[in-house]
Image (cartoon, rainbow, N blue to C red; front, side, top):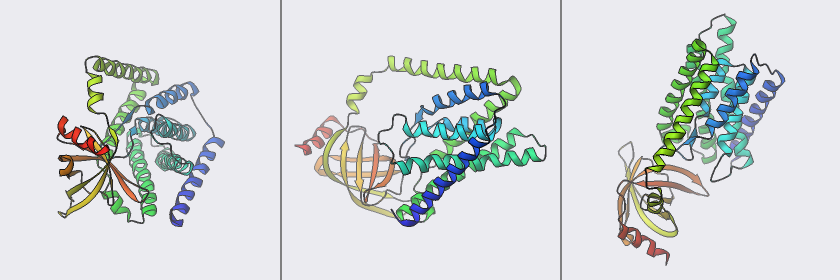
Length: 328
């Protein structure tokens, strides 16, 4: 890792620890019961993860409760909510454990973002202007940009690339998911002020129970075993494929990638360069693969770009068996 990247990451971690220490040293809670209930609810919601197109890993709903804490709770409570929901998101049922420095950086980024986002509330309170809606909109925008720019800057320093280049490779799906969470946080905040926090808390719990019940019912009426067999991934293919795509500037790219695993639904590929498009064409005539696919994620690891591909056209059983023969 370059020295500049290490210095930047360490500086962000120190800033996050400092803000966390300030929040702990000036702890204040006007209604401990209200905070504890929403705190536990925020931790539970953080375990619900959503996978977005072209995004490595998942995103959780904990951000909703961070915004609620910024709008309705004290600074100390908002910081505790941010670091706790972030810790659950980073540690709960993850396929690959994060390195200690990476984990500290992610948590520090959330603390720093929540601190900056809470600042407009101080300004509004100093002039006796109580506008929760305006405060929430400003806070959410600050949190989003501070969080994203912090992470993008770290990636740019690690990969020695401009921040704009890294940003162009990211998906806009995260922005739409962010807008949905801001709308939910705004509705909950308004409901808390109009009907009281107990009513809002009960409504959230009921919605969570209904969502879980509907999910279980959907599983009962779907052929899960058949889907799992169809989506099973076979490791050790070690086959090469020609990948082509058109970037947003109209430039045509062609590269040779290595297939790490494949199924009827998609594949994991290792490429010497990133795929600067949402859709690519995969051609491996030797293995009867000729299909278009959507980039689910693409990130840099060990000198190569690791990408997850979801096929637009499901491979036939004959094509899949042909691919699997390369293992023999």
